Image (cartoon, rainbow over all chains, first blue to last red; front, side):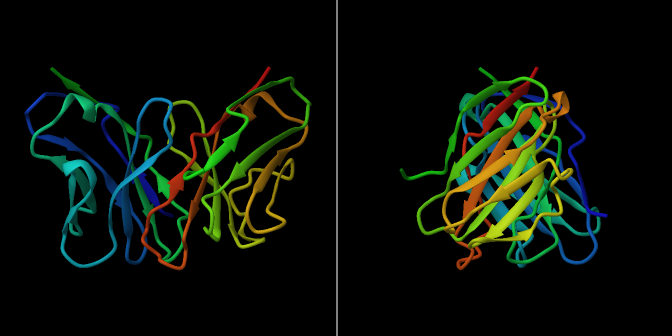
Length: 114
Length: 115
């Protein structure tokens, strides 16, 4: 069965420091991996995806993620955090090309401190 | 509008009542998804429409839940005999499945509270 794990409920980081939000997955076959962000009173917004190709994926707002097949991980990263990055981040996996029947993780709340 | 629109934004009802939640997707998007997000959890897939037909309804928790999309645009999620456990935020999303960009566009959700 497919699953996604986000082991940290909350991540705190100082503004200007690099940030990492962790995600591991379990899926049979080739994974399609995604990160979404949820700001208060806003809908989920797409950040980036990995389908195939280069293991380092660049997305919106300066975020990037690294696909690691051997560790079944897809950690979200940003070199320099901003206070405005504070939000709830969700990792998701789909095992089916062309559909968005995602399995979401439980979310990680990122708090960037000024 | 430019985005996915969901109404009502908030709905409070009593146990046993019937509820309808509406989703208006982005114009031209053929694929429409419903997810449910309970407190402290990630969204859970409910049902997916491609055009007017439900392509996959495997996430609907039981037969009290039903969704329609009669003209391939607006969709309505219907919940009969509501229970307190149905309380959650119901999210709708759409995509231009022809492009297969991997991006779903989500609405802000309808928060359902069953007393």
